[in-house]
Length: 283
Length: 335
Image (cartoon, rainbow over all chains, first blue to last red; front, side, top):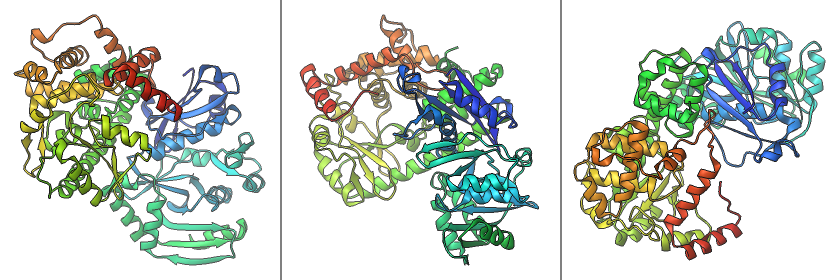
């Protein structure tokens, strides 16, 4: 691995090795204000590599691997090397994390109280998290919430916010002074552009928060809101967790405690302005 | 330093972590994870002074291994219940056996599939009982299925439909096509009962099986873990009667190779007659320690050699040619 990047996101340290310079250069730029892993020791390794030596230069194709592997992770073209690095980091956390209960959720915080927003891809997690950041909330993450099994506190994972398709322009208008990565077109998820979390999100990334509200947002419907019973929230969050099963009793205890102590709501919304008003009224 | 040798040195002498810098630590964990030795490493160095970030990794790996152990023992219990109506002995093998018997290799060890040994004449009953209890076939290809049934030492693997755990049901410890034919009847006859009625192999047979698995079958992938098992078992059981028992199974050479490599890599305390270093031993050593600082496998030529060797050990040349041709047409390529 000729090119190396070490960085910390929230409580997790990463060591990323690449056959090519460009993915590491993009990480160096976009993650320039992030610290190195604690003690220089990474929790996860990510490898970006060419499956055959000539594929480093000839139609370069970036394969993604690491300490924890799944078969058949599809490679990406080198122009999407930044996306490959991001996917690699996400994959290692999703497959390998044992320290916290991992929930696939965006998270923002105000006054020490964290709002978790979870839902299927396309529910608007990343967009809502970015727009709430624009309105003065602390961004804790747009992808993963890390629940401490012992304390019930939620740790931040403020990686680059991954904005897709229409959300790219919506967020660019709301955050005219923010830093963005390159526009990546034709990815498996359409157009993607990464937003760098603001200085406050990065400075406070080691500070956990008390979960105070769980939201299940859904984009593309008439505005509606209903309470979600702990039982339903429990089942939906087991589906939103990649390590609930492997954590076994610890995971069960942490999740039951979360749904029993934190209220949950499902919200449907037709546009971002409606969603923001609903979230801020509930939180 | 080769990072695989660094891992071996720390397993031998945990105090060696005192001299590690951050990049050593990163290489150490990457190789330990790749070799499925992270839990073992964690138990070896737990409690020693080390950077906070390393101590967190140790804590995670220990918790993870503990959960794996609980799940593996539960899986053994599920198999015990499914097979309770069958007269034949059911012998636990490898990781689950070490855990069930509380043997030293099990400390922090990852346990993969549940491996059991049953008499060959009971295998149809065992298969039927497992299918009735929720295990299902995972080899849908008729060639693979037929190949297993005719030539292998085990049934095609089964996975439980609710728990998603795999069971390998063996009737001996090497493929039927291999030149070496271990004495399966003796393995069963001398096995020892645990409290719950499941059985484990006799100590010397446990060592023979580990050596057979590593040096008389397979291509030594992940060999550091299997060799660590052997190192621990030798420390626990010693060498008495080992040569004779290995010879009885036709595994004298594999056992001797296992001991020599274990002495070399882990500093196992072995009697003089077990020590030595043969002409081909360095090649085995190079294969066992082929890792870079990212935990990725290196020395592709050595690996390919051992891949070919594994097949040559497993079956006669004409059969091998026919098998590889069939697999090639189905799209299989060596990793």
